[in-house]
Every structure is written in C-alpha cells, then in structure tokens.
Image 1 (tube, rainbow, N blue to C red):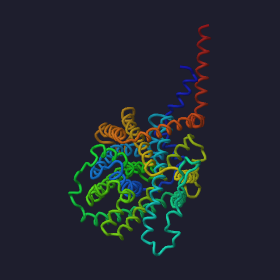
Image 2: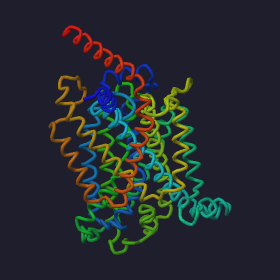
Image 3: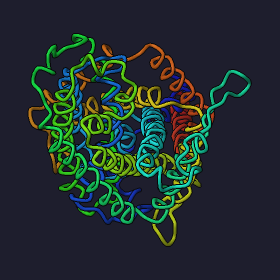
Image 4: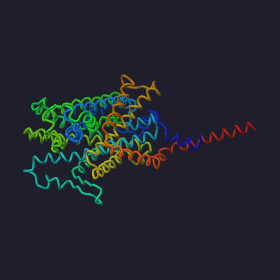
Length: 508
C-alpha cells in the first residue's frame, strides 16, 4: 500500500475513542442541568405528538387501511424501538456526549461512517421537524373553528394564513405562516437555554397527556367490540405499512440521547430517560388506538378525510363532544409544540457535535457566553426548518424521516455488538441484557419493517440524500476534519523514509 493510500484510509476510518470524545466534550462542553425526570419529559414531549394526533388517522383509514390491526402496527413499531433503545441506553451511559448515533458511530466505525450517520440524523430530525410544523398549523385552525363567532374573520380564515402555489408551473410551494411563527418561537427558546426549553416542554407534556386522558375516559363508553371485526382490514400488508408509517410516532426517544452532554448523571439517568420514555408512550398509543378503532366501524372511516386529518378531534365531534374536540385541538397543539422543541434540539446537538469535529464549519460549534447554548447552529437549524416547510408535505416528510431513523437504529445496534467484542473490559454503567439477542432483534425488526413498508419513491429520495452527503464529505468535511492528522501522517511518512534510508546505508 502506498503512503498516499495509507494516509487516505487513515483519515476516512479514523476512530475517536470514548475517552477522546468525552475529553473533547469536557473542554468545549455544554451546561449540565438535566436529570432523569427532565429526560423523560423531553422524550415524552418528542414522542407523543404527530403520530397519535395526525398520522394515526392516515394509518387506520388512509392508504395503509390498517383499521383495528393498527394496534398490532403500534406494538411492532414499539418493539423495534425498544430493542434499539437498549442499545442507545448502553452507548449514552458509556459515552455521555452530544451527537447521539453520530458520536457512537465515530467511536466504532470511524469518521466517514460517522459523517453519513450525522447526515442521516439531519434527515431524521430536521425533516421530522418540518413534518410536525406542517401538522401543527392544521390543528391550530381546528382550534380556532370553535371561536369563529368571537374572532375577526382574518384570524380564523385559513386561506389568509396558508398559501399553496407552484413555482415555474412545476415546483409546489407552501407558505405556511403559523408554521413559520412557531418554529421561530422554538428557536428563541433553544437559543436561551435547554433548562428553559425543558420547562416549556413539561407544561406541554402535561397538557397533551391530560387531553389524551379525557379522550380515553370519554371515548371508552362508545367502544363496541364488533367494530374491531374484521380486525385485519388490509391483512398483514396493512399492519406492516401502518407500522412503517407510525414509526414516525416513536421518533424522539433517540433525541433524548442527544442531550447526554447536558445531563448531570448520564450513566444513571440516560437509560431511565430513554427506556422510560418508550414504555410510557407505547402504553398511551395502544390505548388510544383501541378506543379510536372501537368507536366506529371501519367502513365509516376508510377514505374519510375528516378522520384522516384529525382522528381524535373527529371522533369526539362525531359523538357530540364538541367542547372536548376543541380541547383535543389544544392538546394536539401542545403535543406538536413539544415534539418540535425536542426534534429541533436533537438537530442542533448533532450538528454541534459534527462541527466540533470539523466535519462542518467551526462557527457552528460556538457556545453562547451567557446562555451556554450552541446559538449559531440553533439559528441556522431554525432557518433551515422554515425553508423546508415551503417544499415538503406531511406524509413524504414522515416517510423520509422514518427511513433515516431505521438506518441510525441499525447502525447503533451493530455498533454496540462490535464494541462488546472489541472492547469487552470497558466500564459500562448500563449493560444490555441477553446480549447479543436484543441488538440482533433490533436490527432484524428494523430491516423487516423497512422491507415491508417503505414506498419505492422514499427509497430513491433517501439514496439521493446519501449521495449528496458523500459529495459534501469528500469535497469539504474530509479535508477540514483531518487537518490535525496531516502533520502526524507526514511525520510518520518522514520517519518511514528515514528508516528506509538508514537500512540502505547499512546494506552498503
């Protein structure tokens, strides 16, 4: 192998040890303010939102037509997440550094693989944020419907706030003013500090859980077991399509791991935050799905646009509970707000970690002198999300977000197995039980759901995103991230040349 090839491979496969990652974080770190309860609040805030308030209607009565078997879809997607959650918990307790799967990949597979995972996480969090922002504006106007008699026309008229048109007669363009305003508000909150953001999320989590409890209490008296027959309205195909689509509902628990660097006792609190979040959310989701599908026969829901757009609000309005339907809109707005908050937090922390490693411009790694937040990248992500709302719709955003998440889960599950065998004596505050069964089940379940549920167009779009990521890496990140290696490799090469010279002299 030539010296040039050796230098290239040394850079591409450069690994940062957990010690190096932690030391770098301590030197340029963020303020540690979070405990286990804060992490669960962030997790539940991120998970319970778009999936239950919007995408559940799409999965039950839309193209997937899962019907009552949507409950199985939720359990399958939840199990795939739980297997992966154990892997995240072990890594987060061992490497309590911002960056989530990006950081873990850097410690196992090297720089290029870490870049790609960071690029994919950007797709997961940022595109997911765009999807949620679009969904939130829909529920905002559902809420205002209840006050039409008391509010001015310009405030409640959706057409004055959301504009759909095309550019050059080809490119669809959406100017959604409520989405822009809410993203701007969240950007300001994250700019000021994560503890302030967590307090806001806690209020929103309380509101949306209270509203979901109201729905369950009110709706359970209208459940008829015969509405669960037929159970599989679209067979296993509907179950798997529903699982792939609703996987978006569980995205957010991994965002908890992006806050590891801001956690006071990550070795103990991270596993509690990640796994506790999933168990709570899975129980809530299945309960809502059981009541929702038991209230109406599937024949009255299939293709019903009012149900598909806002399933819980539709259910309450149909049984004459208009006031509760209005409260659901309040809960949905609170839920979606907290999801936006945590997904945008996740985006900024991943990009902050990448910038700190010189894979992105160093300016993004700047920490505010007063608030101790990555303020530059926070503003950038806010602007990126706003621009994204101009061009993406809810369903396509959810599909893109899902495939990015599945990829990250698979890589983390593989990584935890590799590290167990390559570095078995490393201290692990939390260890996955039944190793390697749980990570393998996580990998297989993710692959199976993707294989059964991914639309072909989503696969093509994801492939294009990966290719663009590779172009960015080799045109910018590869050179800038390895400046500190160049001198080291040059010295090693000079040493080899010197040694070869001495050997030749001895032979003479």
